[in-house]
Length: 284
Image (cartoon, rainbow, N blue to C red; front, side, top):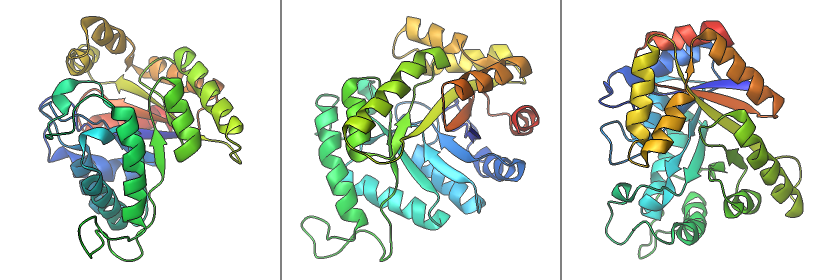
């Protein structure tokens, strides 16, 4: 199982200047990927900006949004953003997409929080049209440079519709931030949908988990704050599941290895740059 690390782009009031250095150190340490958390109505750095900054600061490490809220974006704009990041990075981007569940993240007129599944399915056709170099609707010009590729897509979500979307339109699945015992049934459902759809090979299965090594209390408080907009119960649950300390991190790695994750991305609960080296010493 590969081990990646998240960028602290959605730690409340993150210092944006830490992101390029975080990316450089993560690549030097040997992590497989850099991940981002997606949210608009929160004082952090947009996932596309964090990924673009990381693309310019690194040369080999993978880049993955886990997850970016697809339906909050106009489809052509997101397709162009993703193609640009992928091109700048030399083809290292994987676009992890979710539907979004917080109404305050839907800030574009006409793109509200209802009907997001159907809208994402329509948007996927637009993304791929743009990436193939077809003209922007209403224009004679394409949106991306010649030679742009179709960016690999993973999907999040915890419903059968999400699992079937993976099998129909994606390369794999990203589980939510929850213990491996809760993610295992979703992985199994994705595998089953993949087989039922007649797809060859296996879906790419990515897991995520929060970690904190420098300050457990501060890390859990940050995670709780981030998820408090959903519900107090959700915030308590996810904050309580933060891997705090070396032994907890090791146990998390073992648990996701056992359920067959291809990659585990540890999302930081702090924007302390020293967390990169602390995590690397434990898991790499």
